[in-house]
Image (cartoon, rainbow, N blue to C red; front, side):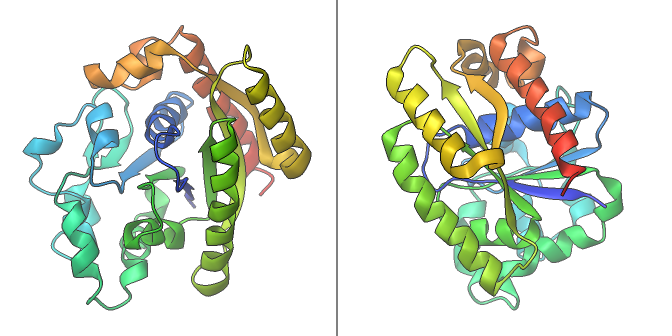
Length: 256
């Protein structure tokens, strides 16, 4: 059975897509059969996986509105090795169209059900809002991975996200839980970040992953080459952190 995880945070610019792409590539390199789902109309995870979003014939949009099946939509990421359900600006229209469809919040879950045996991990890169797209992701998932910066505003937004996850758990998906918090873009030279990191560990305990992803320019450069950071420069500190995170996640799911 595949472990289905959303990578979610209602705050933008916190490293959701960077985490999704690099974790997918790192899991593949660790021998895990992995599917990445790009649920963001911006299509950044698609481009970062080496897929040209402007040339797509079918995308996650076609899957959600019932115009194509998963086997038609999924493509392989040439550099990453994992499969991906790609996205582009068409997906923005799905928000409106989904409103009038039956079981609108479970369209993705039902599409994935028949392919559960094909993968060990399914990662869902969610947009930075609690929209129908994010709701589809949360209804499909067993758990949520929350990437966050160790800054004050990120702490403020975390409580909103936790409340949203609780509401989805209560009303739509009783399997949903927080898998863990991943500290990203971390700069140990900043006292505030060290303080927030300590607060997270104190409040959330073992829900905080041991791996810490440092602020790293090589991770930022990788998408412009259409490559995951762990492929673009495997020796960089950022890539090494995501490779370690993949190993930690594989061990954590054994105890779920």
